[in-house]
Length: 90
Image 1 (cartoon, helix red, strand yellow):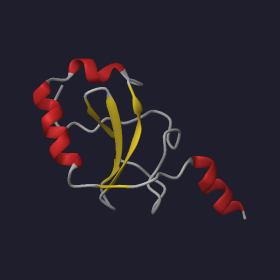
Image 2 (cartoon, helix red, strand yellow):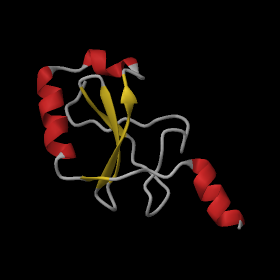
Image 3 (cartoon, one colour):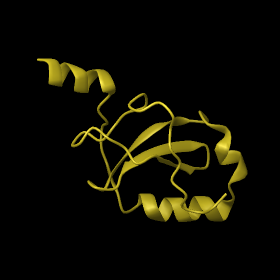
């Protein structure tokens, strides 16, 4: 797998979105851990452990690069789709 490749999750909002804009730019694997990011707001949030099998195709070098990328993002608590809908509806 290409190092630093940000993967898209097929169900938007299911594992959280940026608390500022309600979007995400996909996720990076750090070993078996999955981190979503928002490039615009330079934030990241932890989505889970061993949820997606793609980490198995990555190398130690990929994870070191991903760790370097993630170090440039601030960790936040994500918003979930239902929270955005409540905010929008009332």
